[in-house]
Image (cartoon, each protein chain N blue to C red):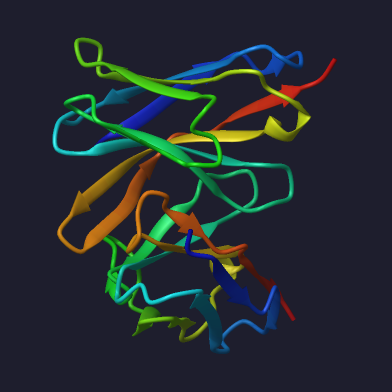
Length: 108
Length: 120
């Protein structure tokens, strides 16, 4: 099973600033990686798949990059609605699909 | 617009069987994998398994011995059964639609979640 490790666990950012979230896979997953956003009491929401393709309706301030074992989700200018928990998910070696443990983006 | 509506028992005793159902509204049942994911309180996401429109299933090896996912295409519903539950199975359970193809797999439609508590 591929283990996904996200860092940092918590990221404190001021509105309008850039946020950079990291995700590392325990083995090569090519570009087979997705990112999700989850707000309290809500289901996750797909942001990115294929490491860098934005899902339908996702604002351009969200971007994904990376391949192999190291991936990054960047939020270029944080809006109030972006404060949430973000999860990466690999699907290169599936089943099982595996998720990272999450990064919480909080208001600084 | 596709929507998933899920339901099932929210309180179970240890050793009982968890049973949840998810109905698909407003879209095709075929061409997708229909998945179950869970989230223990304050923790991350764990993929449980999935089924496609033809009934082919994939399960998380960590749960495989206790999990059964089935579907009823006539009702556009799929279901999860998890046997012999313990307190460790306490979680919010989500159903989701997975788009699966060559070099992509993403869950783009989710149910609202069902809280399941296992307690004696």
